[in-house]
Image (cartoon, helix red, strand yellow):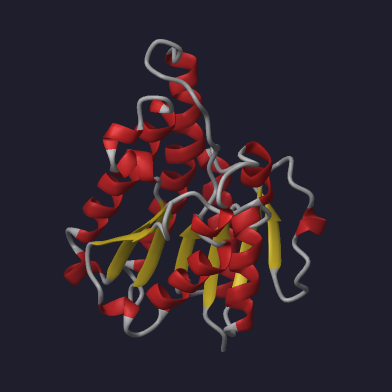
Length: 230
């Protein structure tokens, strides 16, 4: 039987590449799409798509109950969903802060909580992968995108909390920290940049593939920086 992996943000520029990579590795992918995403963006017929508001905890709980009923064990969760926003401390009011908190932390926390409580009951535990951000890992880079960086920084603390009891629970969390990702949106926003210095989506998908491997599963307290030259 193929191993089940939940991927959030599966219809995004990174999510689509990750989905295709892991389907090709033989995993069964349960993909979540945001309420405004179009199901046709998931083009791989082997993927099981769900439309889901990840910021709604009750909706996430219902989704997870259905997935467990239909599939039993979940091997891993890859939590890509999130959002970006600019703004320094002068420009960023409480509304901007709450928006980034909801997009980048709540959406990850609600799903990670469901994954953790199930995985700790599984014989072989499980793996949770978060997508961090370089400005969250290096605070000196955060001043012009402060609410975004603050919200992403909480993912590092969440992973540390999960990993504090990995030996007892069998649940292991990793945070991938990408540099500038080479996406059509980033190319449009920064047309004069040297794209060769950016991080390809394929490189990030390969990093996730490694984390899910037997070798990758032996790592602990993982923060993996994938910067290329960006």
